[in-house]
Amino acid sequence: MVDKKIGEVKHYFNKIGVAAIIFKSPLSVGDKVKFVKNGKELFEQEVVSIQKEHESVTKVKKGDDIGMKVDKPVGEGVEVFKTE
Image (cartoon, rainbow, N blue to C red; front, side, top):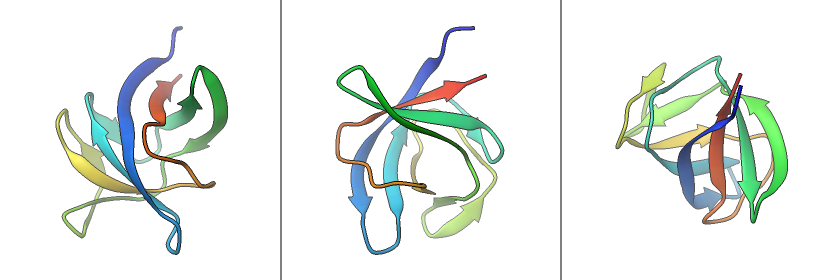
């Protein structure tokens, strides 16, 4: 199955290891995602924590602007793909 682009990093908060991401497709805690920059995969991880407007949530929908705990630093413009 082909990985589907679901969002893009708009900011990374280094001190807390959280990426601010704008989503174009739904995502849930437990899903697997990978981060890609200029066509090169940076890393893959399971979604363990999502916050929307400073509240923990288990799902996001298209158009949501959320914070997600990430395993490694990511920069602005890094693409987020949902993997199977």
